[in-house]
Image (cartoon, rainbow, N blue to C red):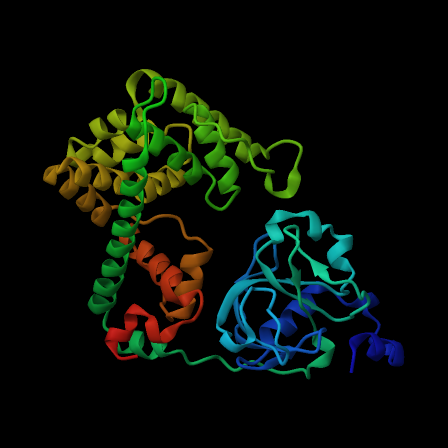
Length: 390
């Protein structure tokens, strides 16, 4: 029965006192593999409810759904109904379907990864449109019974439970090293295409926009990368800022100011040459690298060093056939202390039933690698844990 009619027939179910937090609790309580009826008459299967979003953007991140269709049409994700696969994306939760437009989500690019609109009342017959013009389906939780979710038993949980601490550390170190190599390969590809620009070498033209993007991790990465390109004379225009704010937040403004000051210094000294020099003395390399990013928090400096500087050093080493630099970059990465906890590492610790986060940066990056490669879409059969018995 359509949720609109349920509400009309049952005044006691008025949502005047309902809150989105209550609806979110119903979403998290849904059993896995439940079939969700959609407003267009189709349905989708809930494979993973996702993880809570932050204060800005969609309410649920990285849910996994399997969409089905009884008509010979193409789904919103561009997938033929005959070739439905697991689809990972975001979910937005509202009391009423009309709240999507009332909250201006149809004009906000932060919602362009939303694949399902979850509501109580379907009070609006208009298609739910994202900022990029894509129409997404709506699911009313009034069309589902109240249920209590039983914790899923994922294959990885059984496997990790059988491992001792040393085996788990070895597995996550391997995954972290694979992520490091993956980043180094991507930077090497960019480095091979880079050309000098003004006072900046080809290395700096590749490195500075990457560092700028790293300042935007968890924020507006595209805007920060565009700022980095602009500062090295490779301006390609600026994207519309997420949220379409008239000016950056104080945190973003502070980071952009620090980026500008660093780039001004590097016009004379060179970004890569400055960082390479800091790496020459292994015992003091970490503190020397951190000092270069003075003004940033230690946590953000460590994120830049582990995610960009050290993989970039490995990329340069490969291009220059410098075995000593390659070994130095990898050893620093393996020995680097832990990075700040974030949504991904917390979600993966919960997924793998780890009692605490790994201590070192490499193992934390291993959690990111497993998540990005297979766990985000819950492709358990392809997971690197498969070699352990999946």
